[in-house]
Image (cartoon, rainbow, N blue to C red; front, side):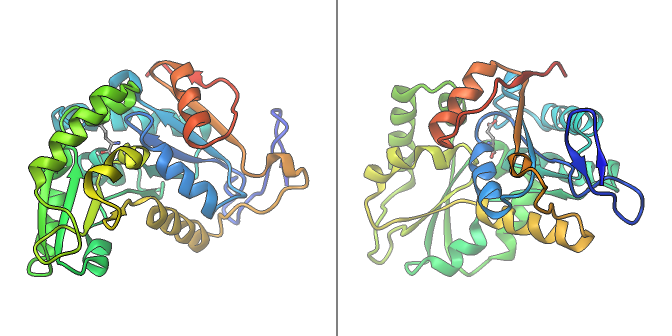
Length: 291
Ligand code: DGL
């Protein structure tokens, strides 16, 4: 066990690297990845997390791949250099689709867990075999999504809805716009319900959307199942850490267990407010990150 100047103690693994006590980096274009962070903290309560929100350069969903790839690289570089992360969770469907392959090539030593719209679980849950998918245009247009869809060919009918502007409205906490966009999008998708020909399952294919379930619920009815990807990502992160012997162990000072630090390229107060509202926790001021 090594004690660091910041008071943290870290285990040393067999290769001499300090890994068990290092943070897991979680990154999203903005506040949406907090829905994944929530699942990660529930699954891995002893882990320390650093959450980076790229709100200063969001949204990603309607931008071209080169922007998303550039921003994803900047985020990883920052998380490695400044926070010595042991694993990265890309808590953004759009960034996963555009950049995860390149990130894995460029950082072969860093385990990277991504997120994809929960189409596979939807096929398991849906009885009507009609499944709605809300996601960003970037995710739906990606090669990665096309391959996912093709792998499920014949299992269900998927109604794909690009939700331009929705992540941005959530990011800005613009309730009126969020409600108007959700009404438009769900109307355009068709009929929701549990009868034959109706969509009984709605995939929330952008990490921002779990925070507006209360807006979507009255629009699609009480019986429709919402599926998001946070819990599977959290379980995968646990597997990745366990395989390497990097799972955190309870420290002598339990105050250190489950610690959370935050950074944003946007407005720190907005990130803090989002965490207090959605994760129901009070946190110290996020660092303003210039990358
Ligand atoms: N939260 C992100 C996702 O899961 C993207 C939102 C955006 O920046 O457009 O796709």
